[in-house]
Image (cartoon, rainbow, N blue to C red; front, side, top):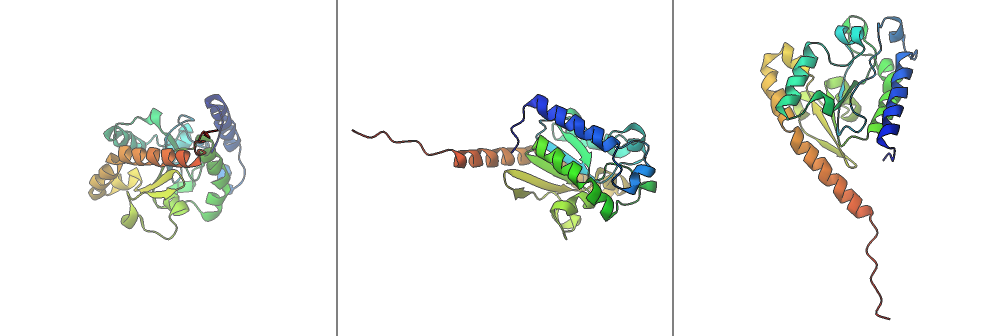
Length: 212
């Protein structure tokens, strides 16, 4: 677990963002307009990880600013949260041409960036949005089967959810996505309880005073 101060965390995330903007690790740097490192507070308790930037994100260099982003804002509001409360990023930091699916080598190239972001922010809950980000922590699973079901890894909960864009394309999924997001406060409370129990377990037992 990181012991950085808030200022150190912010500076570290800013350095990563600058490195991502000039990254040449995969072929996507040849076709992108702007890389999209992600955004949000360095001490966010929830981190959302989508799949890849789309056209709007590529133009602005910010995650989830198109139609799916507006729906994400609505979903956050339904859970009593705001965009400024959470950190939002993708497993791939540059837009694949034509919004195609990210390729394995592109995901692998971006993996170190994502790992560093997670290490610095140290969120209590990580929500994967869509099947490609889900596959990083739930390999071989189907999102239709496990969506909304958290998995504990240490003190952290990973929660697989449908990508907001999926609900925009399939209206039948909208209620499902809203239901999953409505449980975010519950997941946060569970993660907080896990963290407290781990911290308590790490504390040395109180020393008993001898009688003589």
